[in-house]
Image 1 (tube, helix red, strand yellow):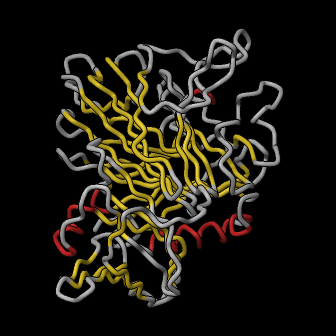
Image 2 (cartoon, one colour):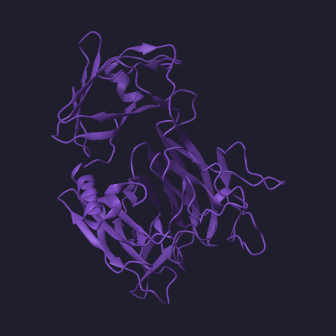
Image 3 (cartoon, rainbow, N blue to C red):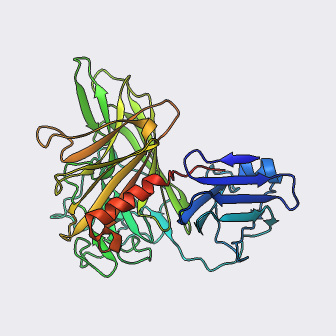
Length: 422
């Protein structure tokens, strides 16, 4: 049986009549595919390689016979893994053959953690953690911390943070609901410590990196909003967040060493007067080796003709660029726009079929300002997909020039690389 990914240029073949059964993962392009995320879904695997008993795992080896670090994630809470994921760097036109061999335990490999997500609350003694929360509920109408009166926020770095060995991000777990960028110059996981010590200002360059983005009243690094048609015939752009949401919850779904996933649920959001409440679910994933996070957003009960909106802050940029193909659309900026006063490129990539338009917000008399936006069509029970990229010049030499960042984004678009699942 041949299963071709709809959204990435990898071909996966499951040889269900051979012995031992094999999975062939084929980079059918002439491009190198570094740190490609491969996700094998248990339910579909079992249709081809047979039943995988509880407590059993899949052995995966590289082309040289070395065991590969595999992450097994229980995503539905039934105490059995649902997905096995691993990273693999493909040479041009390389085929990786995986024997469908099961074992009693995962391979014993000393794995470097390449992805991490966490939410930590402040303790009574002004420390955080040390154990991250699997689930958390935001206090209703939680306000931003006034640092002139309170040196530490109620959550480490003001909310959930996710990182890999290249870049990090965070979400403000309060009415702002903004997203911010951690520029990294280390491959270590650092966001369990950043912000815990008031003597170490994360807005200043440290040996690990720094907070590099000023968000202000913008959508920052891919925060969400709805464009809603009103009865008077006008549209309004409403930020996801604020006091008109019944409940906001955070849930950790997976946490390294290969990938990290969290889910944020915004229950009964009163978008505008006279409209039924909306529920939004966002699943955010990050994995090793990449300069983006990937978001899946479900909007339940959206008003007719409403659009989901995400965006890039433009406080220090006056030009937005576009890269479009038959399958994907991207907007990006590049300028001296980091808080370190150096070069930073930011981009949003989305399947073209979902894109409903692009634009720029006004900078006055509106809740959301200083943002280049990308709009998405909303389909019941189908998520909107997008990736948000952050390319800081101190992280990678490719990001020291506009042309370098543009070529990087063009290569990302050409990969058609939204992860599909076997």
